[in-house]
Length: 327
Image (tube, rainbow, N blue to C red; front, top):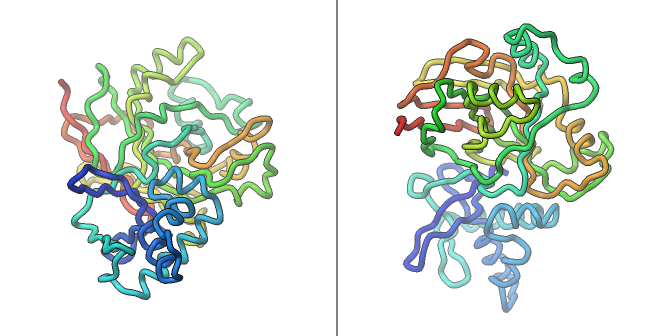
């Protein structure tokens, strides 16, 4: 499945819904399941659908494998009924993608951890500081905790942050946790992943390095925004994770190209490490860190007002961000 969060505007307000991509349409998964329940002669299809296949992404992920299985059943049923099918009370099930606005697939993750898992990237950034790769980096996957309340989605604007003169993008893949767990063995960790999305860990490099000189951070240098999107792709949609090509373009010009298979620390190793002695939860986001060559810092090339940044990893899609001018 390719899952999105999209906004629906009604006479009583705007609501976020979980959708499944189907051609040029989005299937409202909650409503499709309500229709399936109604056709099974359930007397309270909406109530049961809201419990089994919640309409918002975090609650959907918290339902775990049973919700994923019910969602697949609902999507297959809606496709069989066709694009004119409706919910139990005549509600819309199929939305044309051109007519709705999608948000970050998970607009409100409970936590955001970003790793530095590509050896080429830490080698390049260490070299800029005139230092070797810290030997501790090879002992365990390290990460920082980002601001999970400043998530932006595809085609969102990024207001110019703080007073930075070195605004940077970072080309990353992220996994989203789908099951609660603690002390997870590496061999079992893959089962805890709900899916993957693209992540742009925007950075104000001058501010980041100033605060990290005090042996803490990053904090303000990154906390202003992290982009996720355009969709959450379940594991069965990606035949070979290591073969994924990662691209970054600025104003249509390719700035970065990498391959996910060059990663040193796998998502399974990250999950095993983080879950040691502490619980992980559905909706937790784990960023891979920047692929080698996947940021302006490595090229001494930074973003400017008016730039359009596109990160592409297929089959997930393109995550586009519009950099707004300084105020």
